[in-house]
Image (tube, rainbow over all chains, first blue to last red):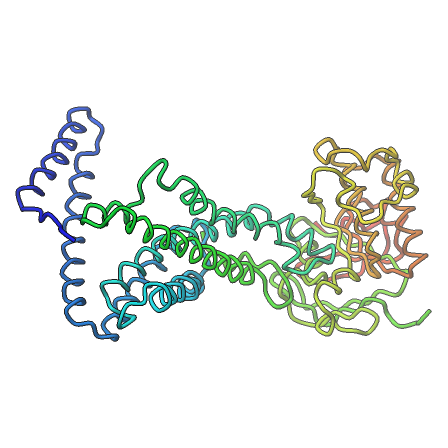
Length: 264
Length: 210
């Protein structure tokens, strides 16, 4: 593989483009100049920090270090899921529903891929494990956030219908069956759409990166297909688990709809 | 037929209501009134086990705690003041639509094929009652079941309910603000006031202290 190294000047040139865009929005009174510059600065600082962390991790492939990094990523993703909910579960459940679902889906799919498909030695080699887990977590997080948001928002809006079904003798799974189905669909549609148009509308980021780094296109494509399948599986399992956990939490042991467990 | 109470409430307490004790005999209809916000609907919801509460509720001597929640709600059937519908047509909400009962309530025979969106409030209320009776509850909790009906429709609903209770030995707790209805459908009238139940001396006191 041959990577053409980027110089400081190359990055500075790209930064000038962004600065130019910010200047243009100021001239047009769009009120976006400060936001663009702040976001650009954050990108630079955050990615440089991650770069430093990865450099350290790659040179010390200790499983405990990797585990710590993975748990930090999981925690940040679970917090992000919680913050994207219009009406989220109160208490530990707000954080826990997303965290447990991602642990069940992203982590197990990532370990399976590392051990069975990529077959790298040791299986936790950070160069493979961290980017793979990152891609899985990022996508699973989106699916879970969309699915849970649909579930809680619909339950809140349709409380009268759900209770009418309970009053007619439905059990809790019967009372929210269609809402659960819609919520899983909402979480899964983006990843299904992404698979359907992959390569036609846009070149997926990972494949583009590998090609830029000098990989033969067909090798990059094989990796991309693998990743797509893993992402679809991870997102599907994660969303199913989160919606099921969330739906259960909406009811107590007497099958009563407990909207008091949600907070606006 | 057994002589014990059909529905028995012991020290029932929930927020704003109780502790309450009440017992309804098989076939008995008890009317309930009280000022808005007194907790009448909350009481019915607690009896249907739709909200958390303390105390015991027994149907034919069996506690709600010893009954699966969905079975409890089939046996202790509550009709909310506002009905909810989730399918497109009326028929999809029924297991075995009964044409005769539908006509008894003054609804046209073809109503089962109608879309829910074209039903009036009164039609929805009567159909919701039929939908509830279809599952055969032994105790009925009715939240102003004739609030949107004209006098003829109101009498039809009262007759249908009276027949149902006589046929099944079902008891009924019926929220109403209409003194004439109280005297027509019940011999016992209760007023919920300040979280406690008081027996009204006669049907003429339907509206209670206010």
